[in-house]
Amino acid sequence: MRKYFVLLLLLLLMACSATESKKGLATIEPLEEFDTKQAAERLSLGPIFEFDITYHDSENTKMDLWIEVFEYGTEVSGEQGQIRSIDENINVDSESIGWTIIDPADEKLDLRLYSYSEDSRGTYTSKMDTLLEQGFPTSHGYLIEGSTELEAGEEYTIATFYQSDSESAIEDFDSLDELRNNNRVAFLMKIKVDEK
Image (cartoon, rainbow, N blue to C red; front, side, top):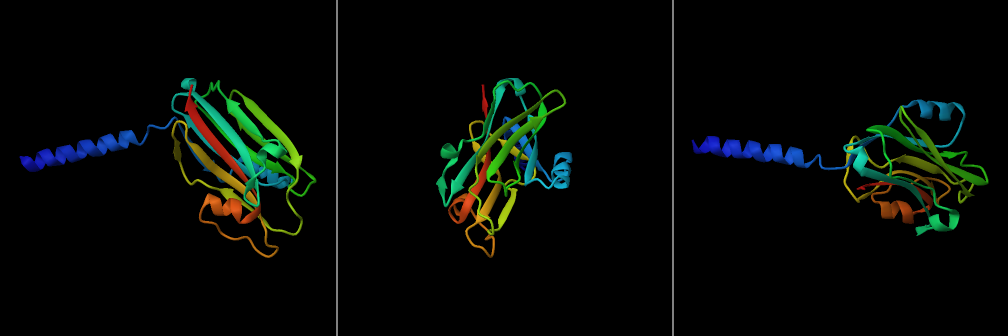
């Protein structure tokens, strides 16, 4: 009888821990293939990142989405005019959000954050003097994999575009500090959800 009690207790604990892991305000997932990416590639635009986000309680959730810019490890977002989107009136259960850089080789960088759902669309644009140098390699990528729960008040870095300070190669990085400090320029896409 004691074995059954221990087994029942163990099952109860496992069920509670599964319920506990779903306490985030939203779930976000990076998309590898999407229509916007195909259009950007046809037009030879810069890198593009897109995510599906599902809100667990959209009426009581607000979202902050922004890009931070670092030059040799020093944040220069404020000097360059930071691009930011704050949505305090989320009226959909799910939507797609994204970030793109239009023509990274241009003298002025055209950064765009966007969102769309079945009911609405929005684009937020910022033009800034380019910090990128010709002849230095660039790289970009998602910084999250698979479905990720977004906890209230937590900042998440979800994508990056960066340029090496070496003319010959892009180096791998093990942390955000390495990414920011060991490259000429690093752009970081960040998100935070919170309760209203």
